[in-house]
Image (cartoon, rainbow, N blue to C red; front, side, top):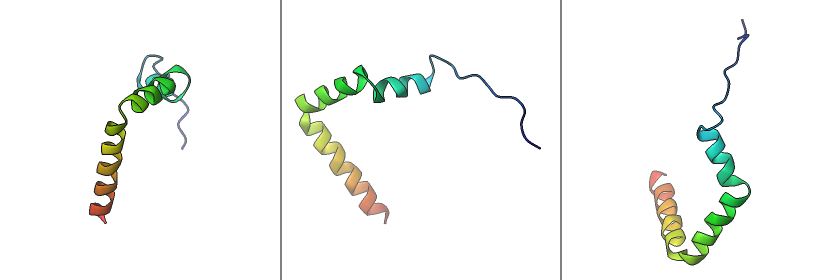
Length: 56
């Protein structure tokens, strides 16, 4: 049997924060921050690569 009800999405919840980060002004702020602090992005990328390689 299928569910016949749905829940409403909280307009101030995590989905709205994620959509603000990925679109419009939030994404440009992230890019501006990474262009000024490029070493943080580089360190994060290296950590991500190390975690992926070590999990194999």
